[in-house]
Image 1 (tube, rainbow, N blue to C red):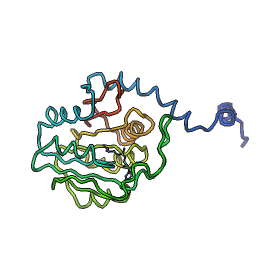
Image 2 (image 1 turned 90 degrees about the horizontal axis):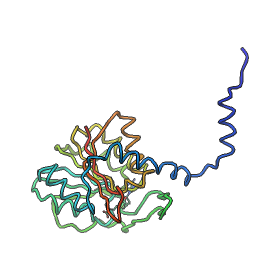
Image 3 (image 1 turned 180 degrees about the horizontal axis):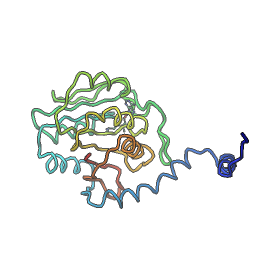
Image 4 (image 1 turned 60 degrees about the vertical axis):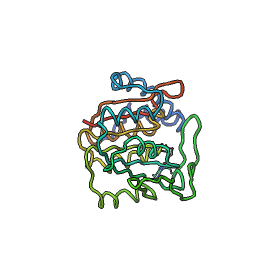
Length: 234
Ligand SMILES: C[S@@+](CC[C@H](N)C(=O)[O-])C[C@H]1O[C@@H](n2cnc3c(N)ncnc32)[C@H](O)[C@@H]1O
């Protein structure tokens, strides 16, 4: 049998030599997705000046102030988990925070303000939150979450907060927890508009697991253009 050269492959070959293998270019080429996503998915979303107003609205209007199971991935000094525990005061609610507490496990490569591995290191210390409903799991999500899921069952509605910044960590959490995500599960993102990380993880997760969602709320202000986004799985 004769081997014939394909024109498409020759073109690809030359393009692969001509174009730079640049992570910055990859990130930049992703940016326009935010605007398309906003138009197509976020038209009905409630908009808020800051994330704490958004949490309060979700707790009141979507969750009806009911008891929740809240899992936060990316805790650092505890600002967001503390805010959720103060917002949802139901005695039966449970709040878990997952973090290495030694900072990011890899560099966070983004165009503006990239961060090095170990940024957000708290020296292994948990935040002090004097509320017995709140607990912490220390270590890489990839190491702590599987064992945790074997020990715990969850009530509905489940609230997931992704604030790890990284694509790898967010994708791991979403895919590993898919079987626990009943329709109605609420998932928050804290750095959504960085687009190459938390947004891309959501996009890839939905494609791989054939999931869809509605956008409940987002932040939009002088400081934030869809940085924080809350979705509800269908
Ligand atoms: C932006 S900080 C969290 C901020 C916090 N939620 C707040 O409101 O202030 C991101 C955190 O994610 C953690 N993190 C990122 N990837 C992780 C992983 N794979 N496993 C465990 N922790 C991770 C980092 O250690 C860091 O503390």
